[in-house]
Length: 92
Image (cartoon, rainbow, N blue to C red; front, side):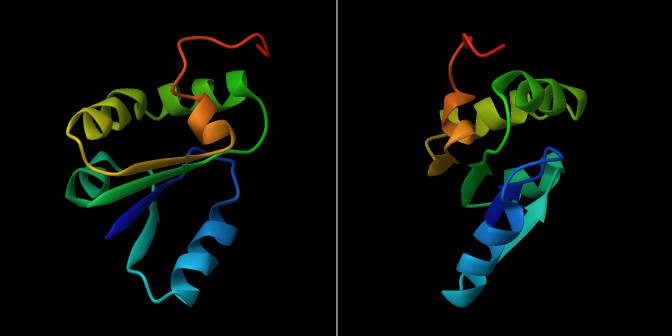
């Protein structure tokens, strides 16, 4: 299963629709348990770096995302979702 991270913004439905079209099992979620069970993780991005990071922190998703990546499982950051891996941004 692929977990698509919901942090309150992002092009979630487009990603979910594409995976559904390909008949790939996926779930939009903001729950750590779902991320831990997932074989792959997608972080779609839309908006600004600061807004995304603020929302990820509010939902306590930063640590679980880092843990997932460090586990060696496949991770895909789309646009801002990839930029979120950086320590900082000039944008915010």
